[in-house]
Length: 583
Image (tube, rainbow, N blue to C red; front, top):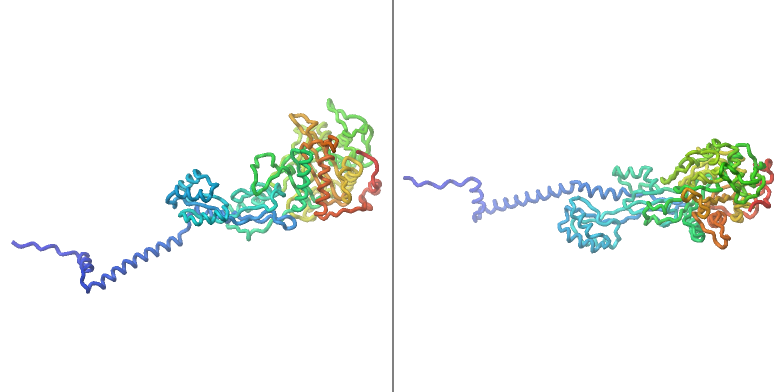
C-alpha cells in the first residue's frame, strides 16, 4: 500500500513562502515588494489629494462666501462728494455642522468667545443636518481672533461687507438703510437695488466695491445738518408731536436738504412698522392749509378771469347750505387779490375757485400733480386723499387747503412751479442740471402768472401773515398754512397742523423752503397762539439764515431795482416797497 504525498503548494503560496524566508538571496525581492507597496500607497494618497483639490467646495459654503462678496454696495455721496454711506469689511463666523465632532464642546467654546450668542439656539443649529449655518454675523476683531485660535474643525470665518452711515441720523429718511445681508430696505438704498444691483446679487455675480460707481445725491449734508438742527430745536421748543422740513431747488427740482422728526440712525434702524418714524415729507399726507391758496390764486390769475386789481366780496361769511366759511383775519369788505393773499382770506379764495367751477378746479390741481401719487427715487410715497364725491363745497374748502390731503413734498413741487416760471418739475434726490430738469417738464402756468405769485409771496412777507419770517437780506417771500386736524371725523380747533412755505430770493427764485409741525403748542411768547407764523414760520426763518450761506445764497441788503419786470406795466406797484396791509 502506497503512502499518500502531501498536496503541492500553490504558486502564490510558494512565492510568499520564498519571499518571507530568511534566506539572504531572497532579500532583494522582499525590498522590491515593500517598495512597490509603499509606491501604491503614496500614489493612492496623491490621487486622493488631487481629487480633493480639484473637487468644488460644498455648495452651501461656496454660496455663503459668494453672497458675502456679492453684498458689496456702491458708496453714496452728497452733492459735494461727502460720503453718506459706504461699505466696511467685517468678519462673520459660520459652521458646517456635519464636520463638527463634539457639538456640545463647540457650543461651549463658541458661546464663551461670543457671549451674545444664545447657547440653546446655537446647539440646535450645530445639531442640524445642514451643510452651513451662521454662528454670529459681524464679529469684532477681538472675537475674530478668539474664534480663529479655538481651531475648531467645521467652524470658520467669512469676510462680509457691512454698511455704515458716517453722518448717523443726518439725511436718514433719504438714505434709508440695509438689512444684515446688505440688501436695501428703504430710501435710496432700496432704490439702488431696484436699479439692478439686487439682480446681480441674485444671479450670483461677484460684485466688489471697485466695480461700483458711487451714487451722487442732490442732498447737501451741511445744509441738511443745519436744517435738522433748527427743526429739532423748533419741535422741542413748541412741544410738537413731530416735524419735517425740506429745501428744494425750484429750477432743477433737486431736494438739497430734508429731515423728518422723529428720525433714526440707519446704523441701528428701528422697527420701521412703527409709524412714528415715517418720512413725513414723502409718505405722510396732510391738509396743507392756507399754503394751498397759492395754487387757487394762480389758477384764477392764469385763467385771465382775475387779475391783481380784481376785487372779491369778503364782507361776511360765505354760506353754502348749513356750512359757513369765515376769515381768520376778517376785514368785512371787498378785497383785492393781493389783499386776499396777505390777509389769507378763506372767503376770497373760495370765491375765486367757485368762479372757475368744479371741473376746472379739479383739472388744474391734476395738472399741478396734486391728485395722483408723486413718484421720486425714494420707493416710499403716498397717494393723495381726494374726495370721493367732489362738489362745489369741496372746491370751496380745497381752495384754502381743507378737504384734500397731499404729501408735503408734492405740495412743494406745485408751489415750485409757481416760482420758477411755470414749469412743473418732479423732485429728485439725484444731481441734475436745470436743462435736464426742464427738458420734459410741462409749463403749467404762464411766466406772468409765476411772476405775479412771486410778487404776492414777497408782499406777504413784507406786510402780511408771513412778515415774521422776512429774513433780512434774502428778499424772502412766504405763505403760512394752519389746518385743523381731523379727530373722530370732525375738525379739532385745539389740534393743529401748521406749514410754512418760503421762497428765496423772490425776484430770482432759487430755493423753496417748507417746514411742517404736527400739533405745536402755544407759548407765552406767542401769546398762546399756535398758528403757523409763530412756529413753522419761525423755524423756517432760522433755517434760511443758517442754510442760505451754505447753499451759496449770500444776503443782499439792497432792494432789487426791478424785481418783477413783467408786472411793471400791468401792475406798477409790484416794484414799489409795500406799506400797510395785513397782519
